[in-house]
Length: 291
Image 1 (cartoon, one colour):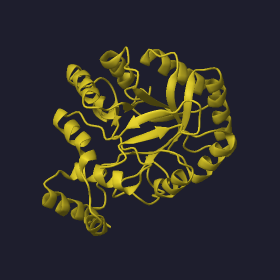
Image 2 (tube, helix red, strand yellow):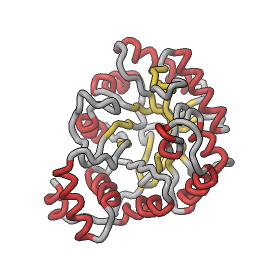
Image 3 (cartoon, rainbow, N blue to C red):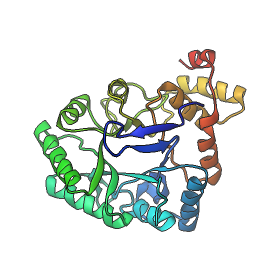
Image 4 (tube, rainbow, N blue to C red):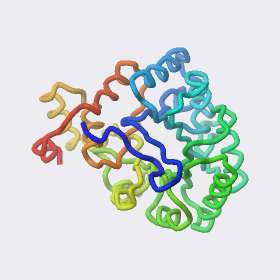
């Protein structure tokens, strides 16, 4: 598979080089993405194995757990190798009842950035994805202004977007340099689902990212919600002698050079399979078959 690297912040003075695929840490938390993992030692070993296999991009957030994945990353990898990129996100928090709550006011965003710095044992966050579901465009702009101020203060290197709408994307582009966009997108989730609680307009944002040369980071990329389409993936995976998950990752890598998959897992075997998926080449006929 070609294009195994992608530049984040290519149009800035401090670009970062990420290798594909990256790794999403959310699954390392407890049930409902809340609390400590059942096997903490296993989680630490998995993160270290990922680095050994060449992964250098890790996606996390201080509200995963909450605080669990940040602390696992620090325990497993600190002091961090020079090429490691840890991308976190702000704009949400977890309630004590495991609910997902907005946390995007200016003072809340500042607290979240400081919290991420503390938990990750960092003086500067390499990449912060800003996500704010709902609210007015004015409130969104206020949040962006806060993050841009934190960037000027040296606490953030690059600012990205998470769960962004097209309107929010265009607003952010006008306000400053957008380093990356993280939205829900997969082989079976390519169109806007207005009822989805997880993401907005991934299919509409990918071409905008390509046009602006901005990495697009799909989450929940192994979603399997359209059985008929997934049957094609199953048939081809059996023919090629690979797993459906591997073929999903390979499809994303062929879909666009600007896509950076971040599949997450708690299994060492699946981790190795996911990373090795970058070596799977798909022919034009196979891509046509998948649709």
